[in-house]
Figure 1: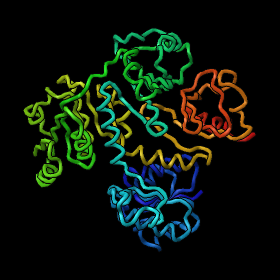
Figure 2: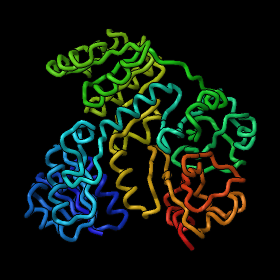
Figure 3: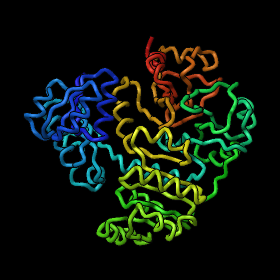
Figure 4: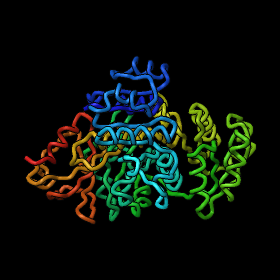
Length: 450
């Protein structure tokens, strides 16, 4: 399949890498020769130097043979026009990264389909929503919503005094009482384990638990975590993400928000927009300023500037000052795996929103959705079971599932249940499958018609 990526920035690089690894014929378009040179050095893809809104450039990239175009430049208008041209030239699927919420606004005069766009992705909005969920659940390192908002995958790092240390998964689950949950994965060092009942918990394990939202507090208690509320929050960076986080949190009762922005004009704009948020103009690299403004008195610190090194360093400072919850915006591949091991509570990556949607398209038609979690080397697929498929032939306990695959939950119509050994998947049901990369093809085949 030929795929065209418009934009050779950080997001474009990741999308091109993803498509190339899936052995697709990838062409990257950008007007910056240096960015294209970097891609040529790192990836096995073709590049075309020029504007993605030019028909001649799209023709040079082989647009008439392409099945998908993904426009992820930093300019909304370029992404929209590139997708519109691709649609007119017969491209089957178009995806645009759009920062403005104009196209998704229900009162908008024009919507995405009017421009021939099949999917609009808002990475900044997705990142802001993830940060807000993490602040609401102070003990979680990750929160991924599954099946809309009916199930949550909650990441927890086990403390040295956790009551589950040294105990088997089977024993811990059996004592869970009415709290229906499943431990879907454990990250230990650089390994991701999809555990069986005999797996024992160790100190510093990163545990990913699937449960219903209302069951999160008792599940946290089982693992020795409290669900204390966060009231005082400092946000570093008045970026789009920082502004969205500040606004959403300021709508909640009993929350005091401080936002620090280095650009005076931007700080003045935010002060007008965010009436109940205290906006402070100051250098976001000034450690003395953060301390003076009461960093040590904060319950949570969120760093979302465009400088990832600054985000990392300031969050480490906050942890040193015993701030309970730190969240950093990190996108560089080298930073994310080590962020929690060096003390950060959570890292948010806005590029994941784009990657999730691209992967959803790349999987078969019976695969409805996909999610990824940084730090967990496994994918979460929502796969519909075909008639006469292997997965529907017996209960889960009697099926021979590969070691790198686990069924988390089953959705049947409006009903959803967390999977147990006696669960039997019926044709037409959708299953939420946790699977290691090496077992994805095997997992898909088990849900396909035999």
